[in-house]
Amino acid sequence: MIPIIQKKSVVIFLCFFFINTWGLAETRETGKVYNMPLVEVEDIVSSWLRHSGFDIYRRPLRMGQVKLYAENQKESWLIILSHHSSLATRVMALYHVDNQIVTEPVESLWHYLSEYVKGSSFEKKQFKQPIPSAVIAKMESVVCVHVKAGSQDINLSGFIVDKKGLIVCTAHDLKETQEISVTLYNGRKIKGQVVKIDHHLDLTLVDVGIKLDNPIRLNKGRNLLGMGELLFSVPCPTNLGGMVYSGILNSPPRRVKDIMLWQVNMAIHLGSSGSPVFDINGNLVAIVKGRYRGTDSIGFLIPFETLLVFLGET
Image 1 (cartoon, helix red, strand yellow):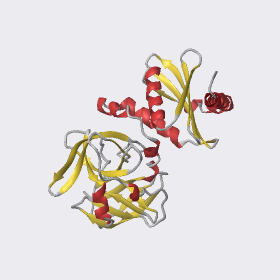
Image 2 (cartoon, helix red, strand yellow):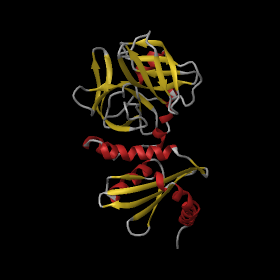
Image 3 (cartoon, rainbow, N blue to C red):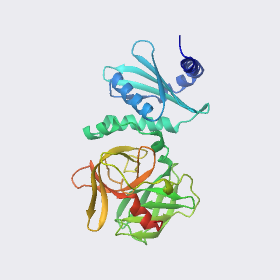
Image 4 (cartoon, rainbow, N blue to C red):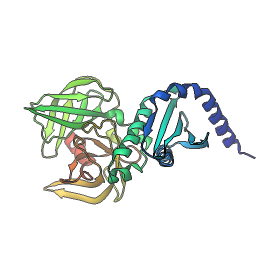
């Protein structure tokens, strides 16, 4: 006999499938083909969903096709994986919140799979770590920072720390008098002004002069981290917006001159400096300072405590 809770899930699963078959057909043209075997794509997607807090139900359809249904209390996914060729898989997906179709998480899934396909062997290893939903929820807090320095364009990452319009980014290559342009998660571009800069701590506070949603809560931040702890950065690197990278804290705090920095084994691309770094629960723990010269997989992080000192909140 099937337990009651399993019966409920099966009923929801079947209802979701029949109700949304038409909707999935409508999105067929926006499905994506990835150059990976179906079994590998299923493993990656399932791990991503499971680590994001979803219960997953799998059902094989006709030959060369698998249906994945995932749900938690209010959210649900319907994903169809189809054999496209021996080394390629077509992915179609629908995401619901409170019975409403939402497109942003699907775009995150596309980015996740695309970066896995084109990433280096190191990055592919990192993408095996599914991104927690608590971290994905912080993506709307991240901004792209653009600075014109003479004939040179400087691109940084940053994040919202106050609804009044305050943004934090790194300070290297910046000057107080420079004009700054900030691009929000929704694509809106606004001008910003440096209101505080500390080149010693390598931090800048920028005011964009308007009310902003989704500030990162500093009262939830953490400073004491454990060796080998899994961390996630949400940057706005050049040509790679909307991504999340995972990494491992692989060294005790290192003193560079008189400044303490964390060392992390994490993919860090050009333009990632200033991006927030979170623990598995979505708590802010650090800020990306930069990468070790000659590699894109060893980085240095500004501790959360340093941010509090900069903001005068210690």
